[in-house]
Amino acid sequence: MDALVSLFHHVRYRYMKPGEEDRVIGLIVEVFKSSVAPQYSPEGVNEFLKYARSDDLLKRSRSDHFILVAQAGRDIIAMIEIKKYHHISLFFVSGPFQRKGIGRTLLKRALKICRDRDPWLREISVNASPNAIGAYSQMGFTSRGPERTVNGIRFFPMTAALRKPPFLSRSPA
Ligand SMILES: CC(C)(COP(=O)(O)OP(=O)(O)OC[C@H]1O[C@@H](n2cnc3c(N)ncnc32)[C@H](O)[C@@H]1OP(=O)(O)O)[C@@H](O)C(=O)NCCC(=O)NCCS
Image (cartoon, rainbow, N blue to C red; front, side, top):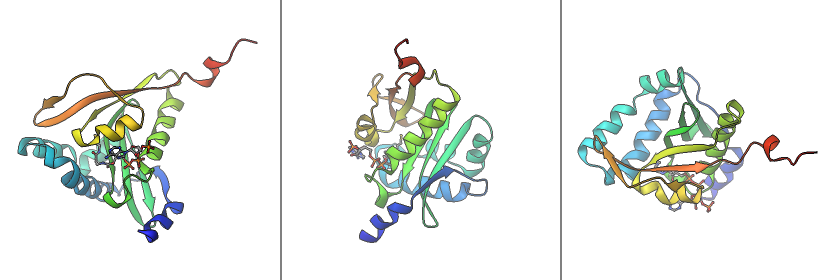
């Protein structure tokens, strides 16, 4: 674990590059199978795996989604996908790197991109899988309704309020 921790000084956060989709999907599927799938029905697992396909990830990244990754050494150890600059559609950190601040940092970087594009953005949303409620709560999200299941995918709608842009918080001269 010490070796892993020392790598943290070299974690880079950046956009996913074309050609990296397979590696990113590999990470997503591995983490999904260990952390999320145990709470899903077989229908939910299949539905998720249909969404987590590398060609579709690339297509989405070329339309109205963006994907950030965290890289340690040569490995991609985490990713976040944001839809239309206001909704988290995928968020995965590799098992050994969880609970070390990497998810929070990725989210912060993603939010900065969203706010730079839309300074008026007031909240960001996510359909949180049951296992991730605790982490999202710690990161400032609150529940926006009861648990729902759509095509076998179980989730809790959550949102996080964003602060006003700095130029709106200034008191008048
Ligand atoms: C959810 C996830 C992306 C968070 O990433 P992470 O790197 O582990 O999160 P961080 O280490 O940055 O932690 C952020 C905060 O959440 C808390 N947290 C993380 N995992 C938690 C858990 N399982 N239960 C409770 N709190 C948790 C941390 O303590 C931290 O709070 P703090 O700063 O107040 O101490 C990651 O755990 C993950 O990939 N989980 C499995 C896949 C998944 O469920 N993705 C979400 C699908 S909607």
